Length: 192
Image (cartoon, rainbow, N blue to C red; front, side):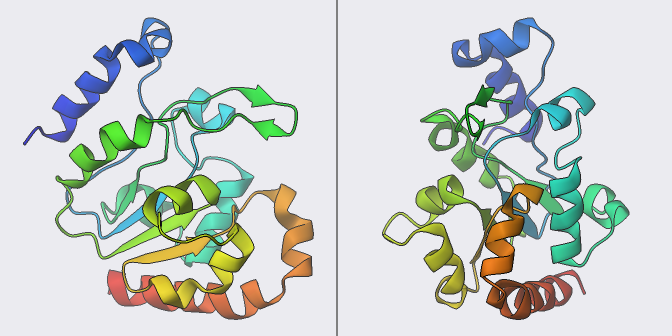
């Protein structure tokens, strides 16, 4: 079984990622072997790629608030893995960032997850993570998140914590009333 360093080197050597490697951009993910919680989002944003720190923006601030953890715990405890659907910023589209590249997660996630024996919960943020990890469900993101209990104890689906989702949050008050307290309780139990 290849270790995380070997996997990282293989990702960088993969011709699919040549554009990034040639520019000195390394894959952005975190997979400490001690991780108990895995966060799967879409792909790093431009700010995250530039700062070399995942979830390093307003979305990350809100995500940590939802989780009920501070920056120190999130980044330095070794308890959180962050394995997005693509490890590189995909670029801009008309309505936000481009989607993660097809086939990327299928190629690299299984290898990385073999190195994480202590995972107890995977948080699935947005449609791409939910479609990949919950392949037999046919619900949209709102319905999937509303039925979060169906996926416990292994998975917990969330909407993206982007400030752009403020309208969605105001239209769906049940999310912050029910899902966030359940999420925080799960996190607290796992981390204690």
